[in-house]
Length: 424
Image 1 (cartoon, rainbow, N blue to C red):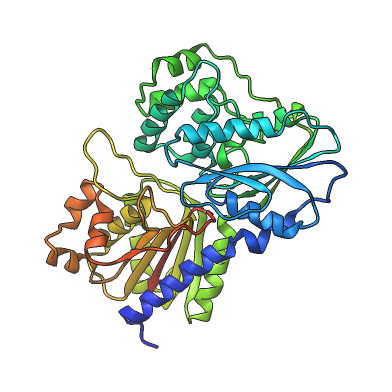
Image 2: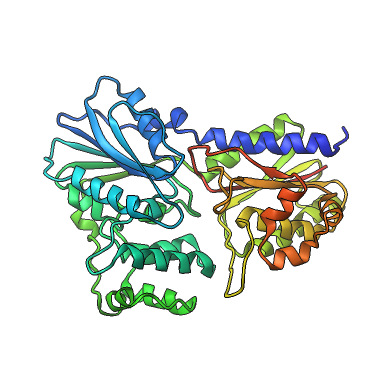
């Protein structure tokens, strides 16, 4: 069975689409709902999938008088009958992010022990739910957010900082809902599926401290706005103690591993032997490209760690450290792919795709891209030197120029990145 460019491209796209479909809340949410309560049902939520999760909930419980509010990214709204949907900015919060977060806190006031709060959380909630803590302004939060995004910090590190500047994150939403029962249904987009990190854990007590935040900002050389610095230096940890939110339960309804397993099943149907390298790979995007290129070469040359035709699969969230210099257009997936292409140097018989399952790589209009043995040659025909482009963090522009971006539009789910390398 011969693998050529057309066949490899089709297989990679089929694998990526299967991974995204596995995390569709319309398929998975109903299986995780708790028993219907005696009292009211209040729905609160945030994330790129929040509106679709809300619609799926309404479909699953058509006989329940549901009310509530969810906040999603601009362009990610889904029609709902009973639940209010607010759109806001991501990855840097805006005024709607603050309004939406305050609205959620209002929704959970004055509830009783027979009432149920259903919290629908997915990736993106950290930016979309931005209620600044006392003494902090939205402008302060925007500034620290931009600095964190450019720093190369991991998502866990970024969210540790965000939680200590928030009136809703780090379990504060659940604490505000007491004594009502709080059940969180979450789609994980973070390495390790840590409930305290997903959306910065509005319903989950925060194990990190102000001392951790001080160390993180020092590590990445971030100089916070004065009000933020004052809070971090003087602040006493005030996130709810785990013992103060015994009424809260947390359930994962979709995860990166779920998506990877579906991708692997699709690969087998296409005649490929899949190997899942892990669902929580982190590190600098371009360096991850170099590492995985080496594994792909080993498969091709030695049949190790498995024999071709094979598909190497991985998930997680890599980072792009911008530094102080200018940067072009691109996200972590296209930067990973360009690093991979540079490392492979046009090796025949190896193709790759990588994309964010939410359909948006960084802040661009593409989920990711595809690499072929001819990627670098076609870039040179367009006058583009891949190494120069990589140094300028302009990977989106290169893949756009050669027509190899993957554009899905908003998928309304988010289980982080899917990387697939096909060795024919």
